[in-house]
Length: 297
Image (cartoon, rainbow, N blue to C red; front, side, top):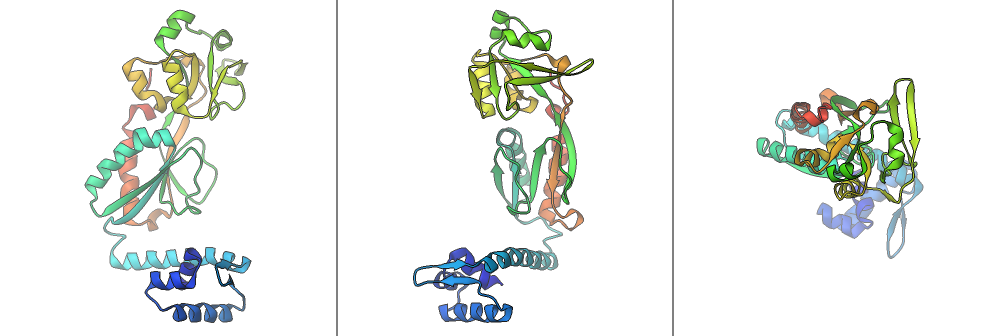
C-alpha cells in the first residue's frame, strides 16, 4: 500500500522508487502483484505518465486511511501518545487565526519543543478528515458530526463605526435608523443588503442601500476606521480598534444572540499526545479571553 500511495503521489514508478529507495523494477513488480491480487488495474500507464484509474482513486482513499491508522498504532507503541511530539496542524478563520491563534501557538511551541505546527488560516469551513488536519477553532453553530467539540466562548455580531463619523452623522438609536447612514457591507456576514436585529416582538429586518460591499473583514474594518460608515463584523475582529478608540459599537441592545466558539478535533481519548496537549492548552487560554465571552463595550 505504501508503494502504491507513493506512485500515486509522484505519478511515476521511477520517482516513487527514488523516494522509497527501491529499484524501479521492484516498484513495478510490487504494483503488478497488487493489481493481480485485487483483480483490477490501479494505474493507466503510458510512456510519459502514470495516472490512477477510477478503481485506483477509490483504493487510494482507503489506503491513506489504513496507513494513517497503522502509523498511529506504531506511534502509540513508540510513546507518541504519552509525549507530545510530531507535526500538529491547526485551522481557523483568517483574522481569528492571525490575531488570536498565532500568539497562542507561539507559546505552545515554547512549552512543547518536540512539536512542530502547520497552520491553515482560511475563511471557509475546512473538513478535518478530508484535509488531514488535527484541530480547528470554529465560530458558529456546529453541524452534527463524529468530531469532538469543546466550547470556549462566544462572539457577537456587532455594528460599529468611527467616533468621528458618529459625531458627524449621529448615533443610530434603533435599527431603522441605519437607513440614514452610509453602510459598508461585509458580505460574509450579510450576503443580502439587509441586517437582522433582535426586537422585543421578534426579529427585525432592515434593508439598506450601499455603495461599498467587501468580502473580507480587514477591508470592512479599515473602511469603518476611515469614517466610511457603519459596518457589521464579529466582535473579536475589532478588539484592537475598540481598545484604541478607533471604533465604537452601536445598537448593542438589538444584537442577535452570540455565536459559539468551539475547539474541534478528532479521535477523543485516542488522540495523539500532541493533539490532546494543544486542545487542553487552547481551551484554557481561550476561555480566559474577554472578547470570547461577549465582554466588549
